[in-house]
Image (cartoon, rainbow, N blue to C red; front, top):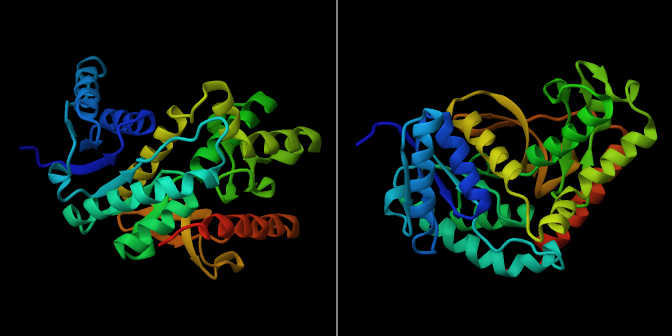
Length: 309
């Protein structure tokens, strides 16, 4: 049996399978893909393993309908839940996905009591509260993936607008995952040059709007949620933890006074390493940005208020 460390991805749908595929290609861990649908995780795992022969990584993905194989995982990524469809608001998802996420977290934490939980299921901010309450784990080890995806969308639009390489774009998106996110334009640069020197206020406003509605734009085109960028974004968090990278990345973290917000999961920049969230990075926000963040917090509190746990 391999002595490599282990990552579990729960939910073998498009996002979970993409996350597993990206991680398998990184080639530093064994991956367990879990789903209740018989045959689905096993089939996707087999397919990803066979891709290793082409791309040159070791076939170490296991598909399972239970949690025994997940024992002693270092990280558990939870993508399980029903996806958002065209006419569904994020709030509609709450009651359905609350039950699913609670059940998954319960099963996963028994097998891997030392793991770090990364939540991807929507509505993201609310599902982080569910996972924290069900697991009883400290906030450093239970957090969500949203800001990386929102930042990736913002960065893509910036690269197109400024005709620059996306590799040179440094952007930051805070707040709730949804229409009320807060792109921090003041902290956004291209090759070290502030975005405001390279794009007009109108162009920036359009990119900010498109980023905020980014998930909805994809739902409209695909009739379901996106998966390539979200799956890769989840994998980036796993990398930062498993490789102890100390990366500063925007994640949905439990705040206790940072940014003037208390007792709420919100998207903020955090330093990620082996222990999970090692610190919350507090940016200096403009007055407008702080106001937008407060409004975002109010919107998140409303969704969290729907929870039964």
